[in-house]
Length: 91
Image 1 (tube, rainbow, N blue to C red):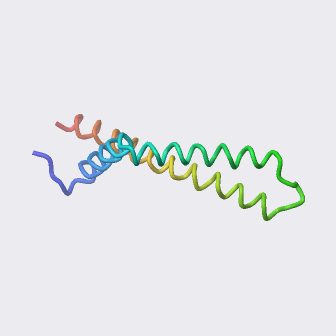
Image 2 (image 1 turned 135 degrees about the vertical axis):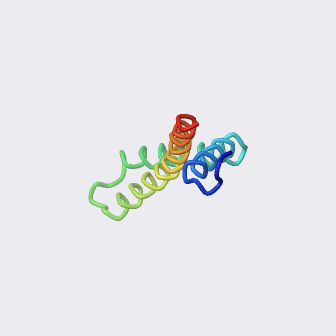
Image 3 (image 1 turned 90 degrees about the horizontal axis):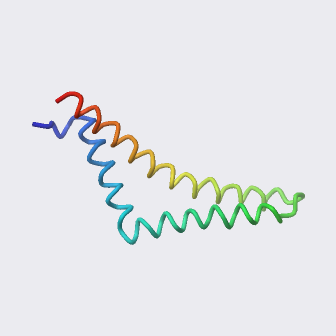
């Protein structure tokens, strides 16, 4: 029987919850919106005045935030997958 307090069990469960969340309309919306934000800000960086550091920083920040959201979700899924493998190996 699996121990619900085991960090591998918790990571495996959480990773699966994130996977299921990303299959929902809300999860898909967030990923699409984050991807679109990266694309919009990256495109704007091509045309921003190179003498306007504030505008450049704002666009860079938008890219970093959107990429972070996608990265956090991916990291949770990856950690969950690794924990599932560890649990399978320890059976």
